[in-house]
Image 1 (cartoon, rainbow, N blue to C red):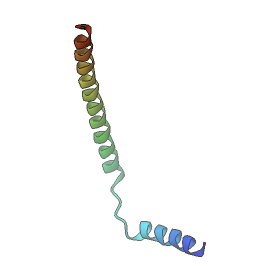
Image 2 (cartoon, rainbow, N blue to C red; image 1 turned 180 degrees about the vertical axis):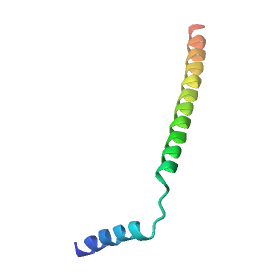
Image 3 (spheres, helix red, strand yellow; image 1 turned 180 degrees about the horizontal axis):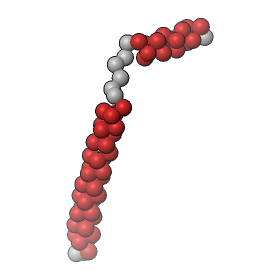
Image 4 (cartoon, helix red, strand yellow; image 1 turned 30 degrees about the horizontal axis):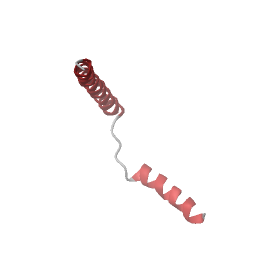
Length: 63
């Protein structure tokens, strides 16, 4: 248990002294970029899914 407590203390010290954090503005910009590309990717997948669904429905209606 003592090793675990020391690990947590060392981790906090590492985060506070040796890490370089990006600015709040840069984090917000990155979040917006990720959100936009996620929405675009989701829409692209939805369109492709609809195309395949329509194609398969038409194919199976032939029989």
